[in-house]
Length: 95
Length: 146
Image (tube, chains in turn yellow, cyan):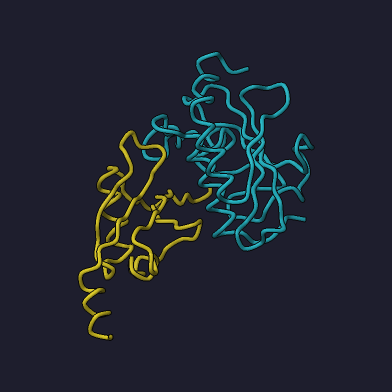
C-alpha cells in the first residue's frame, strides 16, 4: 500500500492556474509535481505576466483569499485534488 | 458622470467582479442613479459576520482609478468611521484608502501616476480593485474601526 502511494506521489501531476486581472495575457498555466513550491509558481507566473517586486510592493499568490507562503508545496495546497487555482495579487504598501 | 464608452467597458467587466464577489460571500449592486458607481458587499474570511459595503465610483473606465469609500449600508452614508475596516492604508478618519489603486490615493501622491505604481488600464481593473480589497480583508483585517 505504501509503495503504491509513494509511486502515486512521484508520478502525480497537478494542473496549476494563476490569474492576474490587469494583464492582457491569458492566465498562467502549468503542470507541476506536488513538491513544487508556491514560490516557484509565483516567480514563473510573474515572469509570464512580466511584472516584478519592488521596495514598495510585492506580488503574492492567493488561494481562496489566503496569502500562500512561498515555502508551501502545491501538493499541500491541492490536497487530493488534481488542480489548483491562484490569484496573483499586488500587495500594495500604503502612502 | 462617466461617458458611454466607460459604461460599455464596465458592463463587460462587471460580470467577472460579480462572480468573484459571490465566490467570497459578497455581492455587487449598482449605486442608485450613477451608472458608473457600484456597491460591493464584502466580508473578511476570518470574520464572516462582519459585513462591509464598499462604494466604487468610476469617472472614466478603465482609464482612471475609482473613488473607493466604505458606507454604513447599501446606499448609506460615506462618512461613518465605523463603516471602515482597520487595515493598513485604509484611513477611516479621512474616509479614503491611501494606496495606488484609488482616486483618493493618486490625488495624495502625484508621484504614483507614472512608473510602477501607475494605474493599470489593461485587462479588468475593476476586478483587480475588488481582488485587492478582498485580499486586504482576508489577510490584513484588524477589526472594525470605531
